[in-house]
Image 1: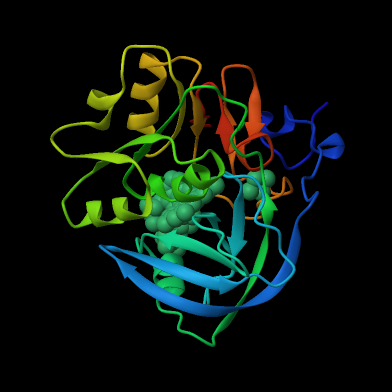
Image 2: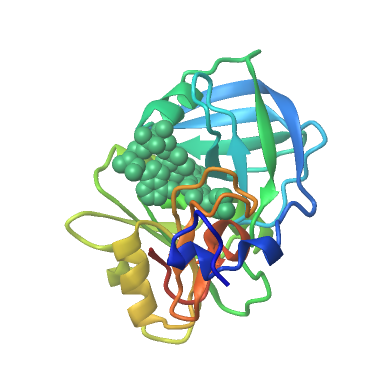
Length: 248
Ligand SMILES: Cc1cc2nc3c(=O)[nH]c(=O)nc-3n(C[C@H](O)[C@H](O)[C@H](O)COP(=O)(O)OP(=O)(O)OC[C@H]3O[C@@H](n4cnc5c(N)ncnc54)[C@H](O)[C@@H]3O)c2cc1C
Ligand code: FES
C-alpha cells in the first residue's frame, strides 16, 4: 500500500499499523540535582521523580532548553533517587543540556527502546568515546564485568573512571585491539566504524546503534535504519540490535 505524502522507503513500513513504544515510559519535569565535568563530557544528574531507570541501553528523551525537539540520551548511572546522563556537547541541544545548573528543571520521557539482553555468561563491555555512556549502568547490572574502552585523547579518556574494571586505549590504538579471540558475549556502544569492526570480530555481539531521533517512540520515522532484515525504527526495535543498522 502507498501512503500519500510518504516516500516508498517510509511507506514500506506501513505506518498505519505501526506499533508505538511507550510501555513503561513516563514524561515528567525533573529537577537538576548536580552537574559534573568529566574530562570533555558533562555528567548531568536529575532527580528521578516517578521515572524508572529501565534496562541498560534504553534511552530517555531530554528537553533541551531553547530547542524544539528533545534529544535522546542513554542512561549512564541510576543512583538512588537520580538518573544521570553523560553528555558530549557537540551541538546546540547537548550544549544547552550541559549548561543546566542545579535547580533548573527539564521534561524527560522514558525509558524508551530496547536495551541490552542481560542474560549473558561471559560479558565483555566494549565502548568508544561518548558511546561509553550506557556502560556504567550496564556494568552495575552485570556485576562489574571486564570492559575495554577506546578514546580519541587522554582528556576524553577521563570518562573511563565511570566504568569499573576498564582497560583503556587511546588513538591511534583502536579498542578492537583489546577484544579477545576467545568466545565472549560482547555488549558494545560507540561510533559506527567501531561497531562495524566489533561486529566483524564478534558477529553475535549486542550493539547499541545511533540515529537522529525526533520523537523516540515510533511516531516520526526519523530514525529508520536498514538492518539487512528489513527497515526498522531504531527507537522501537533498537537501539540495541544484534546485526548492523545503516541509516536509510
Ligand atoms: C539512543 C541514543 C542514545 C544517545 N545517548 C547519548 C548519550 O548518552 N550521550 C550523548 O552525548 N549523546 C547521546 N546520543 C547522541 C545525542 O542524542 C546527539 O549528540 C544529540 O541529539 C545532538 O544534538 P545537538 O543539538 O547537540 O547537535 P546537532 O546539531 O543535532 O547535531 C550535531 C551533529 O551530530 C549529528 N548527529 C546528531 N544526532 C546524531 C545521532 N543520533 N546519530 C548520528 N549523528 C547525529 C548531526 O547530524 C550533526 O552533524 C544518543 C543518541 C541516540 C540515538
Ligand atoms: S520513530 Fe520517531 S524517533 Fe524513531
